[in-house]
Length: 136
Image (cartoon, rainbow, N blue to C red; front, top):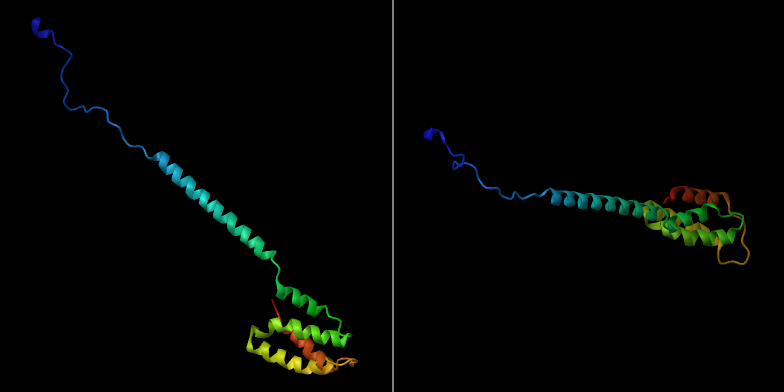
């Protein structure tokens, strides 16, 4: 039975030693988290800018409100206000420029005098047409 006493310490040549495998999943998670955070911050910034722009003071919108709420019975005051506030809308287009210049010429007789008469129908029509032309 001597031939049957085999040792279990047989050298194995095909098994490699344990090696470290680099694990990058933590870095992938960190990169994905930073990317998501950047997107969330970008969306918050865009919402903030939208709200800020929406609530911003708009001189054009305020001037339109003032022009539309003018009392046309106070002729002299109305002529001055339309001349000064309408200047903002003058350069919107060549048509606006032409209409503004025409309206200012028609309002001239109602300014620079101590006593002025009421607007005639033609001037009232031009004022209403100009109010309809201007927009924000």
